[in-house]
Amino acid sequence: MTRVAAVDCGTNSIRLLVADADPDTGELTDLDRRMTIVRLGQGVDRTGRLAPEALERTFAACREYAEIVKEHGAERLRFVATSASRDAENRDEFVRGVLDILGVEPEVITGDQEAEFSFTGATRELAGRADLHRPFLVVDIGGGSTELVVGDDHVRAARSVDVGCVRMTERHLVRDGVVTDPPTEAQIAAMRADIEAALDRAEETVPLREAHTLVGLAGSVTTVSAIAQDLPEYDSTAIHHSRISRDRVRGITDWLLRSTHAERAAVPSMHPGRVDVIGAGALVLLSVMERIDAAEVVVSEHDILDGIAHYAASEPR
Image (cartoon, rainbow, N blue to C red; front, top):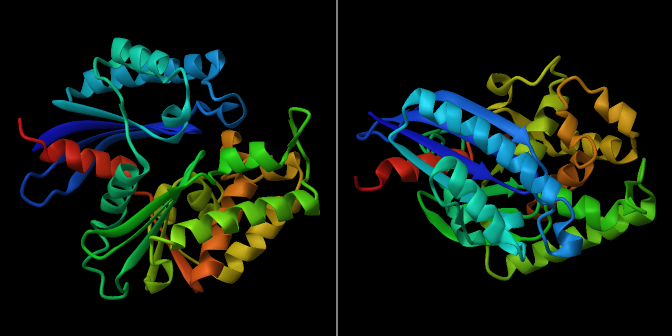
C-alpha cells in the first residue's frame, strides 16, 4: 500500500483525503476525509484578486490539514488548486502561503486537468456496473466553474465553464453586497440565461447529448441528494451513488430559489457555507439534466479529490 494525501482547493471549499492506495487495483481505502468552507473565491469575479480574509481562512485550514497529514504519515502529498486561484492576479501570494505551511507547491491546474481528475475519481468504481451505461457525462459543479466531461474508460472530451455556484450567486443574486432573499424572477432568468450560454459553449467541443449516464459531483449535487432523501443530517453513505430523478431535482431547485435564507438554513443536511449559494448550484444541475434529457443523476461522493489521490499514488517514486 502507498499512503497518499490529496488536497483539493476550490472556490468555495478546501478538502483533504488521506488514503491507502492498492498498487495493483488502484483501490483507495479512506483514512481521513474532510471539508472546510473557506470561500477562497470571495469577490474574485468582481475584483480579480484573492481577498486577504479569504487567504487567511484558507491558510488556517491548511495548517489544520498539515497536522492530519503528519499524524497519518502520508508518503506523498499532492495539492491541487482550481478556479479561483487560476483567475486571481495575486495567486503567487496563495502559492507561497501553501508552500510554507504544507511543504508542497499547489498545482494551479487548467480546466482540462481538473476535468481529467474529476472523471477518474467519479467513474473508476462505476465502470463495472451493469445497470449504468456508457458513455458517462460527469458534471462537477464547483464554486467558480463547472466541469463537463464525457468519456468511457477515459476522457473523450471535456470543457470547463465559468458557471459555479459562488460565481453565479455573486454575479446575479447579490445587490449592494447582500444576497437577495429570495431572488427575483428577473435575477433567476438572467442566471439561467448565463448557464444556458455556457452549456452552448461546452457543446461546441463536448458531445453532452451522447451520454447515457449522468454522474453529478461536489457539494451542490450532494446537498440536493440529501434534501431529496430528507436526511436528518448529512450522510455521505446514503448520498454516495444515490439516484435522483429530474422531476425531483426541478422541485428542489424551484424551492431553493424561492426560499429565504432562514428556510434554507433550517434544512438539517445543509452546510452553513452553502445556504446562500445552493440555489445557483442546483440550477446548474437542473440545466444540464434538461439539456441532455437525463431522467436521473447518479450522485457520487468520489470526485476530483479521489482522482488527485489516484494520480498521486501512481506517480513514480
